[in-house]
Image (cartoon, rainbow, N blue to C red; front, side, top):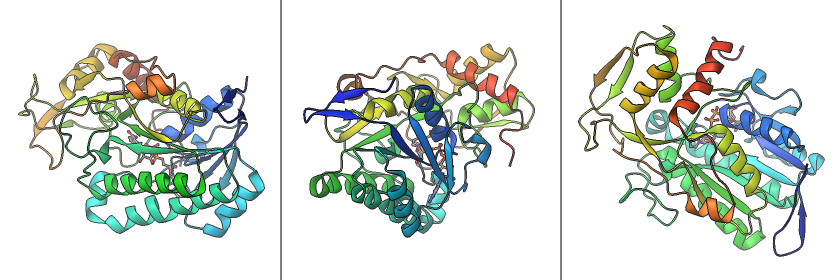
Length: 337
Ligand SMILES: NC(=O)c1ccc[n+]([C@@H]2O[C@H](COP(=O)([O-])OP(=O)(O)OC[C@H]3O[C@@H](n4cnc5c(N)ncnc54)[C@H](O)[C@@H]3O)[C@@H](O)[C@H]2O)c1
């Protein structure tokens, strides 16, 4: 099933993929997708926030921290990977405002070790998990790739800096890369779902509240300039993200892509959709706005649709929530620790 694509410079065959951060939420689902497509996957993860049980059983697993430069080089030399997918980062915005050093050290310094090893071992593609947080408070929505990037926290800044590092590595070393800026990753596959500890994402929090695992959901701000007063976000299913990663391996050139559905949904609309999927009420309380929460974040993903020939297939909120609900019911305590 493996593809061979013509990148304008001859045929490109991809087989062996290193997935850094493949024990995490998005990396595990992406590994599953790649394995289903016939790729060979090696997961590298230090299990800081991921789970050993989230590593797909068909993948090889290497327990390692990207901070260990020698080990990262050893792994890349031995693995002879065709491509690297880099999901391994810290991503709690609030924590990044308290301990920026943790974010810059991991999301930049450790990531540089991986990029250097990718260059040395001649990988044909480097796919990087970037984020809508690189845009900060956008000047206009939907947000296109050319919108100005003015992050408002160290997390977003660390991701933007690494995008720039990849740009220079492509200019200087010829590293071919795709920086994929996800908006709100959501949903689950049959076997891989969201188990962040602590959880900070809306859909799992809503579903945990419905299941009685949490007493109530906090809704931060209902006085925004949006139709129902709550913040609007663009929710993208992890399987659609996985598909974009696979397509990015064959991108015609290095570049940045925004990944979202282009449909903005408010917090209240997501609560209503969760109530309709589960048939249960969500106990929520309105709290003051959180500093730095933009009212609207919606992606313009035309570039990914055109250049990667990518098309999200799970666009409805109900479908996304249904998949997450099924996963939470199947794994009520998440992954074993
Ligand atoms: N979840 C979202 O909505 C979202 C949105 C935009 C961008 N992102 C980005 O996508 C990526 C994956 O997000 P996620 O939600 O799956 O996060 P996650 O925390 O579930 O997964 C990250 C994985 O990387 C591993 N890791 C971190 N630092 C490492 C290191 N130095 N060495 C080895 N392993 C390391 C962790 O143990 C974890 O398994 C992150 O880079 C995140 O910034 C996520």
